[in-house]
Length: 272
Image (cartoon, rainbow, N blue to C red; front, side, top):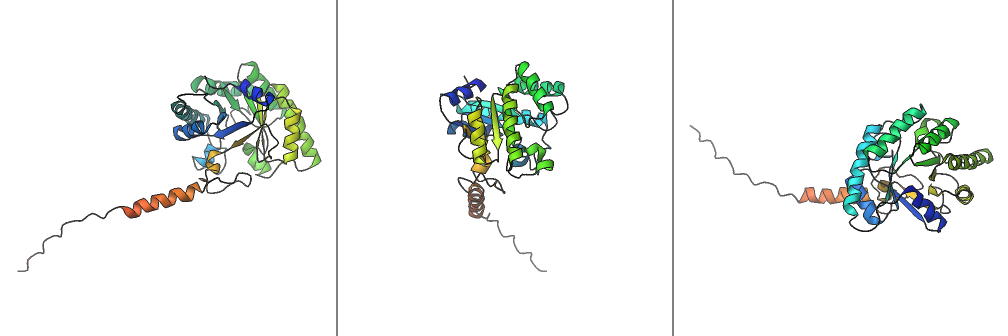
């Protein structure tokens, strides 16, 4: 049986770290499962990592469902024994911001059409909190996301959040509101480490950091960033290996090693 959302809270209560990696297809799903991730996030970052968009905004719900199913197949193929990770899928831009009815329909499709056991969405505005409450009451587990929220890139950019007293207090307040709304966990992205630590200690739900220091209940990373496959690395996620250059160099060596075909010389045309 795969892990369930409630298992993450039990890991926090037991003082066990929580590891989350992203995946987007059968290959990456198998890799992160074999590596031993506790949870796998099919994040809307695939819009940039896989589909070549400049932001996460263009990816559609149908595309997220397609990639989530592919990821799940890879996870299943790699989990012949042991515990299968929890699978979570991002709700893409404008699938939950317009109305609670739209959000339930979108999140319901994720749970009906993929093996995912939960969805992730961004922000803690009053409308978003109402959506989360509706989703949770409908039986749909929700992971929250605060700090740098990529779907708000045109408003906030990719700058670190929570740098002043007012925004710090707002993030702490928003974290409590997400917990009260029923979120089973919270991603906190690109904020000061002491703020993330305070949030983690003040909430009973797990706080999963990315670019938020080490004083969190767990960490999440975009797998392509860790493997050095992306052309631009976020400052808080240095690559573990230079995967892109290694792959390009290996392919160049193979291309250079290919034999040139020997073709018979055409007979000379006799002159009259």
